[in-house]
Figure (tube, helix red, strand yellow):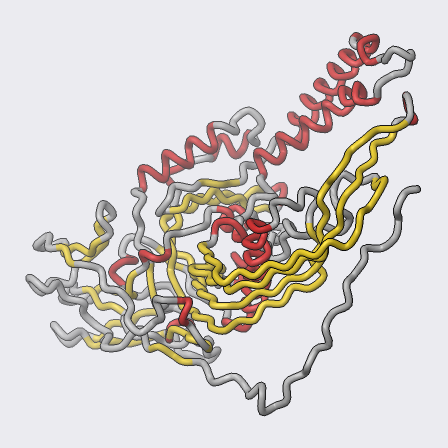
Length: 489
């Protein structure tokens, strides 16, 4: 008989609840002042004293545009580099909570001529003195999210980004909306530093559940009454390990963090991660010269839930390396993540961004290029009527092919094989395939696989429970060892 009994759960050991003396309240976060020694005003070339300094994209160094001297990037000091030793909560000063009533208008006195220069930090961190033409920079952090801890310099040149965007769009010309094709101009691409939180985690993961290993597969019956059955061995499975996650990257702009926005294609920006954040350098306003930026407007508390869930996803997928024998899957019933240490720093990361507003759909389309890796993803407006017509033609052709090949889909008993009916779905499959290619609504960053993570002190416990006979499903019911819960798409 078919086995429909619920999965057997081994009794859990009694849980001892720690007393307050055993579980003291967490210590206050440690704040690392990442702008130590910084002074607002002129950033001068160490060789000639000029203030006209910008990024040399070829090598990532800052370069004086007067004497052409280049100087090494400065790394942030004070943050933990060995994440396996991280304890408590460490926060870069640029990642501290935003103070709502912060005055975003700053007035500087130029040290060269004495003139007063106003900078609106909501939109810029540099201004040129209108008298002596020297550049003044905001170097000290202010609690409005405009000055991060670190910045990852642009590596991809504008012409290279244009070529990537043009190539992406040209592959989607046939069904592109006529108005979009008329107005598309890759010259409108903008280099923008978008705000992110970079998070490092030192944690201990404990997972417990059940897994199945297939032992036999067989078919009974004839014709339409054929049924495939599976026999499997059921095991109680436990995994316990230390895990270090480095450089988990989360959007910290409320607008871009909302990847389910119906009027924007924000998910394509999320999908061009990861960035090589280990190459980030200490904040210097000169890295932004020639580019735009969007300041952070979310706090750690607003994204900590996403971080927690994504780290759990990463832990679950790291455990899969020890579960290869469970070919029918594992159903975890207990997943505990004890975070021993976490480190947060605010960052500006570089993106080449092309945007197009489709008025009839009230939809903002983006084509984004990772300015470090060239990873490109985008959304192109679709001429839906054209796609529907072609899909209808494909459906008609599929129907005709089904009729013509019908004799080939009849078995020896004279009964029609159902898989031949797939021809009747040709038009629907074609429509959704093309729509996905143009819109890319499901594109996302695979944080569970692409985030750097290492495990240590892995402890495994696998206990045979029983044999299960005549199961109908090819995979274990309730298997969740490959599930994703932390995607914001």
